[in-house]
Image (tube, rainbow over all chains, first blue to last red; front, side, top):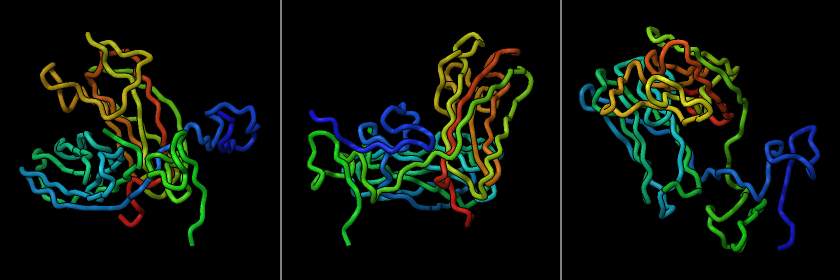
Length: 125
Length: 141
């Protein structure tokens, strides 16, 4: 196969000799492509938790990244315990039609949870 | 107007390839690295520890953190880095408070928290982090 593609090096590096770590873009070693991103929210109830879903139309379970906060607190990724509160856990999962976000029943206060999410084109599962 | 740059993966027609079959598509945003670094804790079995890393952004940025964890019998997994958060299974004695390594971010800092009982006192736990320009939450919150 012919040697073809696109490379962009970091400032100060020769694009023809730079290591992969010193490239901003290398079409052979592609990065995740964000097909959707946004903010969603849901109400968390003490002793119950709460959840929300974000629909997508990819037809497969995509890779994703998400962070949750109760606005005033730290933003944290899925599976984190909230050590500023009652160690309730933020959980997220990917399926062929939607991403699901939830806070478990360890929540001991009522609050509105905010989730910022990225859905990638890459297959997550 | 339909314009931009696309590169398909080998074996796919760039004109018809789905997003997942592109190596690059200028219509898709991507993660942009803002900063990266390393750090370490020296465990004190009686005290939880938090490292605070200033990021200088005015919003909560997306991030990933990888850390050494316990490898059994109170010793660290030297050289093996696991994606955070990490919490041992409850069935092997996991304590949500003291045996967990987690991370969070606000508009000023990235915080990495080592539970006191992850490893025995005096053991070094190394971590690596990447902070992205992409927001974890917009500055409107």
